[in-house]
Image (cartoon, rainbow, N blue to C red; front, side, top):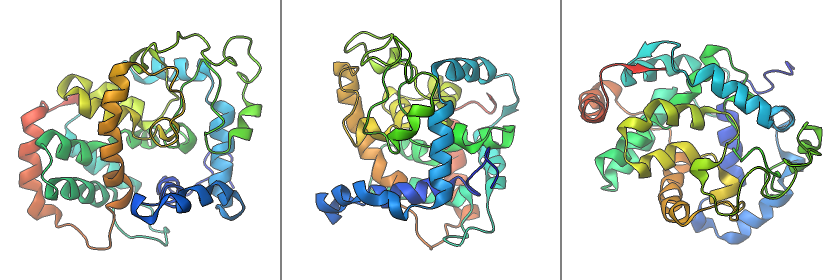
Length: 285
């Protein structure tokens, strides 16, 4: 196993999420029973979390933000980025043979079928585009995974919390405290989150989308916040209001996958029009 890339496919993390957080209609008991899931989790996923929790320090996140958020790597349109992301398809995945773009279209089509606003549909289409970080050479533990604040204590509700003991910030005199470098109820816009595809795509697209969509993109992997209700001491009143949109988006992210393949060519004109409504022809990545 390659220690820098323990999972063969970033979709393994999403499959683990579906098992960890079954649909609400299955009942709260199914969710609580998952707290004993560790004995059956794939070894590759456990190795992934060990690396993620060990290396996602405050200084690491600062370095990655400096490295990537200048957005000078290349210029691409949204559909071009979708096709670029499609090269992440893993033919060895036994669970599905759908491509990345087909997964995103399934989410967008499910949102569309439920009559949500056009910006919501578009968010479903693009929400995982930040995974192109893998194609820029980033290891998967720095691209996918549950996200969380850095610069303050790591919540014990984060999956595999025990691996944070390997993290250089674990015993830091400030970063190990409840609020760390932040003030109570300071608001998530002032909180530095762990590095990954959510944070990256938020910065690429934030100028073009309504605030509700920005929250969906930036925090859809913040499971400790929107599923475990952790870090409430950092939330502002606005965060509480906007996280209702994150929770509304979450089922489409996790449970819209099916074996029925979307017709990409048939759907493409609708989505090209939708993309053009919100985005310029080229974005900086």
